[in-house]
Image 1 (cartoon, rainbow, N blue to C red):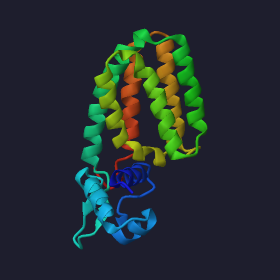
Image 2: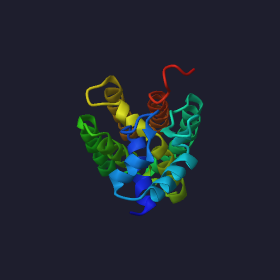
Image 3: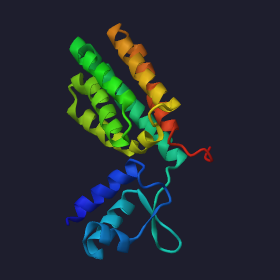
Length: 206
């Protein structure tokens, strides 16, 4: 099996919260799971370590990295800057049908139980909002950064307070756009990204 496939599979599980921070990844177990020798596993684990998703422990084992508060804050600041810019550019070009489609996606998002599908629905929602910006490079940067925050979806199960707030903020953004108030929509979006990022900060970190 291609090490790239193994790397992506493990990356998806880490980002989705299936593999929790502190989980030790053992080469023998992974080799048996993927039906390969330990060499492609070593390559995959090294790539994940280089990307910051794994860290080497004192006993030389590799464990899933916990999210550091400062890293989350930095990610939040960058995302707010880029995504608010994308919405400002896109909003004047958004059609009523696009906004209705985004509303339907948000209804599906509210009821979804699978974190992976939740992540896809949220991506689709924001893709509609930013899609008329006319800036492909900006959208590619946003997509890359949103991937770093995927662990947040596992922390917002159906029926939870974070999920309800998540859904409500999306509707507030849409209401502002329908009313033609782009500034309000951007303000709500910035707060929305900040709240989502806040769910990722460990409670024992300042």
